[in-house]
Image (cartoon, rainbow, N blue to C red; front, side):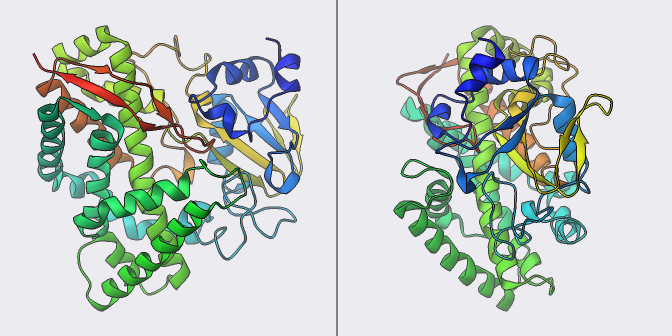
Length: 413
């Protein structure tokens, strides 16, 4: 299919295009023939506005690294903005959520969190994390079959984020359900709110407000307590911080784990290679992150008229234009990765962008890597292989690439 045929009916705001995972074949064509493409508005597009689509690694990395010209908050004549395709209101999401906030305030809040996720801090909890990973996998092995997404891939990140934030472990599944409901689009389209998502958002807001108040009155070592007692965040910033970390701390890593294991199920030679040589685990973790690329896109807003791409033949962009960065496409870019559609547990080098780039590089990157490595390591210890026992159910969203259900059988031997 040529670019002309493809672009005639391409709609990246039609969520049904993402119900079988990320449309890699579409982006391979875009990279080759229309790497900086203006997406016109369609019946599905929120705000009724078009936006730029970047599909090549170099262009995506350049925009992500240039927070002055490409804002996570707003730009040009816009009063709102943010990192979704649709504009979110300033003072509620844009400029309040940490990932939709520009420096210097973004960095000031981020520095509060950094001590909790340094390699040294995480080394202190690695034994606990491994103990939890063993318990999770052993429970699945004992049953013989499970929903790998729910019972294994989601469990370690969920338990870890509850521990990190200072949330009671017995509340974690409630938070999991609320986060899923707010992130899913099973009953709505972009820019819309469904009954399920609205109810979950309200319940999470109430829970978060009560938790912040509790931590302010009785501080502890958790991250919510640290931020709640910093003294310079507004009540809304504290609430949004809680919501963001519950979603980000559970959603992205569980999808990386699930999609990484799915790749190994489909490639038994790679599973055997990893089982025979555990020294490949660090490289395998990076390949899982590249392969899954669980954050599908982030938006930036041009703060001034500028040019995208090569200066001598670039594409003019106007102040206020929406610019979308499609991370899975960058991570399959043939100009950067040899044989990018091969899953290779020994891939070197592997400078993927799955964890972002620039000032908004993933705060929990080190924790995500540890969680993926531990789940893989324990699975390799306990079982000979996994096999699918039913159809996969993908999330209906263009914001996160991931599964909602993955039925498997765990084979011991």
